[in-house]
Length: 205
Image 1: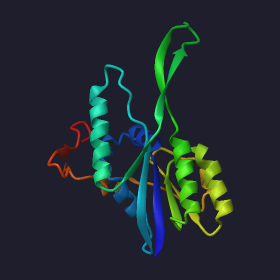
Image 2 (image 1 turned 120 degrees about the horizontal axis):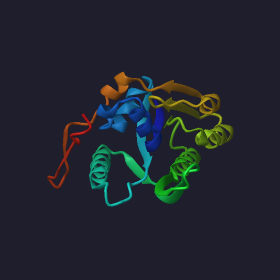
Image 3 (image 1 turned 180 degrees about the horizontal axis):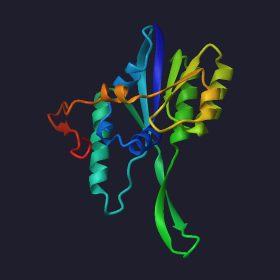
Image 4 (image 1 turned 180 degrees about the vertical axis):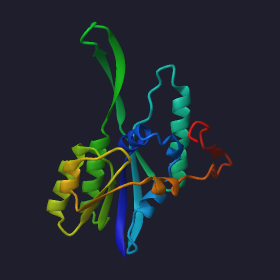
């Protein structure tokens, strides 16, 4: 039985779902999704989710609550979450010179690369399933395949996401279809060991 570890690029997946109008699938069980993408001779041994916690800007308390609920729900399913951070940036309009504060997510691709390389060196997987369409992951994928030619790295493109660079450097690739998203939803209610009930956000329906 081939061992598979899934590496989920949270931002790439989220914006792919958003761009595709798939808000109803945000409550996604990532471990179940990965299992639905496996071949019969494969077994999922771990799922890593890479994202960054939403920064408080005084107007996004509801967004923070939804994200925290989702992260707790994922951890209840055995998903291992790793966090980058947001970097504050001042942006300016070239036409009118007006400025505004924006935040740019950092470290997700680096965290994925480090975990992928560490797991390869530890011989933790036979096949890596990378759920992303971010071409920044091309180099770490290529390096792992060069150093460990016996290991396979398969890229699963989220809806609305694709990279020809990733396609060329991977052992194989596929596109996640709506049927897999529909089949991989978390339960509406998840009860934690302390009795607290996590509930699917009302806007994610």
